[in-house]
Structures are given as C-alpha cells and as structure tokens.
Amino acid sequence: MPAYVIADVREVRDADTLLEYRRRNTDAVANHGGRFVVRGGDATLLEGEWPTQRIVVMEFPDADAARAWWESEEYEAIKPLRRGASDTNIILVEGA
Image (cartoon, rainbow, N blue to C red; front, side):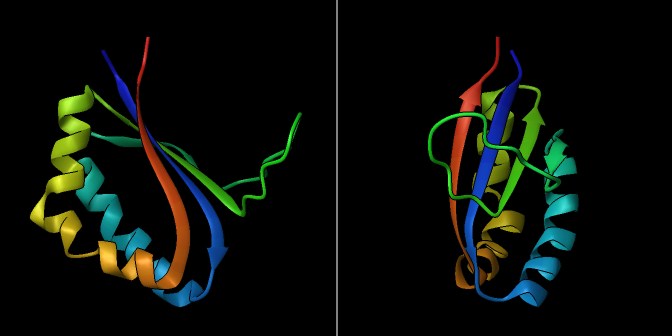
C-alpha cells in the first residue's frame, strides 16, 4: 500500500538554504523509492483555515520505505537545513 509524506511549510526564514535542502532531498527521496507528487505550486484554500506557504507531497511504495527515508543517514544530514530555514509540519499517511 503506498504511503505519503506531506509537508506543510508554515514559515520560511532562509529561502537559499531551503533550495539547497530541496536539491539534496530530491536524491534522498528517490534513493528510497519515493517520488514527488506535489512540490509547491499554487494552493487554493477551499474551506477552513490553513496558513501555509508551500505544500509538498511525496509518495513511497509503503510506510516502511517512507520511514527508511526519514531515518536514513542521508536525510538526517539535511534535516537541520530545513529546521533552521523554515517551520514545517510533516506527516506520514498510508494510502488506500
């Protein structure tokens, strides 16, 4: 069953650092069988409140592959870039 990692970027403090993070994360995601389904783009709020600046959705073959990416040395090395440059909520959701 596919699994999705959804990132909701709330605040960006350092756009240049985030560009470097995105560049390095592209390979990290691919190395764990993942792909980007949504990577930014226009978002239209249809209902409620959602003060986001950017949405990213990554698809992995399953939750184990997503967790392997999340816990990998490759991704651990770049988490500080994202954390220092933005406030981001990230969730893992299993698909149907």
